[in-house]
Amino acid sequence: MPRPQKKQKLEDGQTNNDVAADDDNSSSFDRLGTDALANIFGFLGPEDIMRARLNNKMMEAAKKAIVPMTRFCVRSVRVFNALVAMTTALPNLQQIEIGYLGRVDKYSDGEDPEEDWIAFANWITHDIEILSRFRKLRILEIHRAPLNGRYPFLFNFPLLQQLKINCYHLKWNLEMLAGLPLLKELHCHDNQFLTGNINSLRVLKDTLAVVHISFSPRAQGSFMNLADFPGLRTLNLHETSVTGDIRDVGEGDFPSLESLTLPKGVYGGTGYEFQHISDAPDIAMAVNSIKKQRPSLLIESWHASLSEDSPGWYGLDDEFDEYYGDDRAAFPSPPLHVRLVAAGSCVGYRWETIDGDHPCKVNWLDPEPDRESSGYEKYIRELRVIERQVRFFRGFQQPPSEEAFNVRLRNFVDEYVSIEY
Image 1: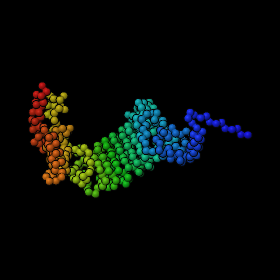
Image 2 (image 1 turned 120 degrees about the vertical axis):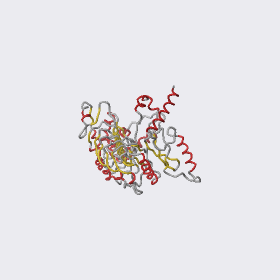
Image 3 (image 1 turned 90 degrees about the vertical axis):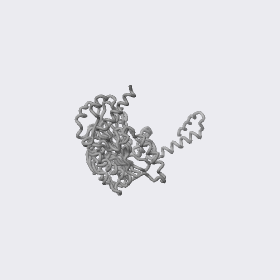
Image 4 (image 1 turned 180 degrees about the vertical axis):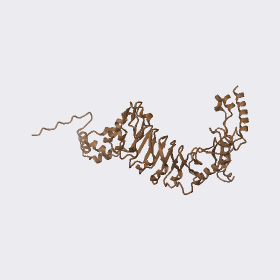
């Protein structure tokens, strides 16, 4: 004769109906299959899923779960060890950031490592190749991670859509991006060992929307190689060895572009160095013509400079620099840098000091708007602000001669000294 089941002890305020409901809920949850549980886990972050793996069924469900797009940042050895566990527990992780590990910890060296970093052989080494197990990865960020050499597996993720690399000793070539066929966004900053020609990006012509490669001097090629990329919205090649001529951009080029930053190796690029003061109007007009083609195009922090090799370039008087060296920052430098300015819809350029604090008078490239037009009041309002900024170089629309500059500077210094003392 079967033994009767013991009645469950009721908690304060709990009824037999409540116990029955709990049992029904428990049995209903138990009836869920691993696929259903995997779908439920798809609404949780990676840490929550790891905590929820209470039995074998839940562990199997976690392996099937597509982990939502939540950044998982590896910035310590403890978190790295958790990532190692996730290679089998959560293989469908979609977003990972690899960073600094600790004072005496590094990742395993790659191919062709730099000798100066091999010297840290006594550091604790961790196997970075475990990343290759996350085949569903959509976003990978490598930020100041202790990597050294080449790691080909980092560029073999068939579903990756966004790659961010800011890692000094990581060696890689733009051709390696062919292993990321769905890549939409490429963000690279301060990659001293990045090599290759941006023409290699053409294998991603139909997917790339953002190309940001900055402070990576070994990246080269012509920026016009990307002119027919249909979805390219942002192009930033600041401080690279990319070349070209901004005047080559036609109306049908870069059809989706919203933001453009070109290096000084491009004619009309940011920081472009020209040889003669008389070159400034053509350069400014070339940049302005791009703005006219694309009124919404953002050309960030554009400026150009007279080259130090130019016969018109001059620096600060040696005697002045020696005598007033400690107070040097208080005094203007020669206005040998060109920037665009705008008053309403009217664009012009002006010569400025390197810090922009002391500009010359604006050389307008557009005519003054009609007095009856809707934008005239805005033009006048912004024009007055621009004109008030001209103080030290009042009366100059281009750099004064070296002699005229030194005379004005000494008068300024005499006034400065009299106020100070």
